[in-house]
Length: 137
Image (tube, rainbow, N blue to C red; front, side, top):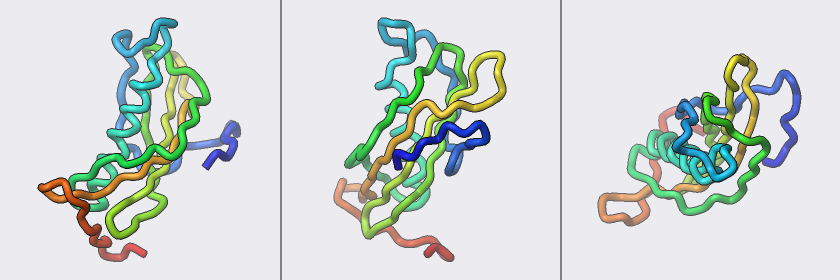
């Protein structure tokens, strides 16, 4: 999970789940984008992906790892990519990467990565079995 991704030819892993523009309202006192805002975007992207896999509501139960590699600036286009790494009986773990394209640039830059775990739940909030998709291993 903590592999170095510094290659010029590196590219995002997983499915694009969210793309958003970093705005001034999302900054910390230093003028950079607040890490909590970015973590929230990553969490939403993971939930979107795991909800599709589980075909149900899901909740975050763990953020197992986070690595803030580079700052995000106002005006950056942030793309959150999610890769499902494990689906269990009621939970799923995903690797999430946040990439940015800076103003007046075209090459994406990996800024943050993490591993999140979600649990599928029913309408009462109890864990719900995840039914594997057809053709899934």
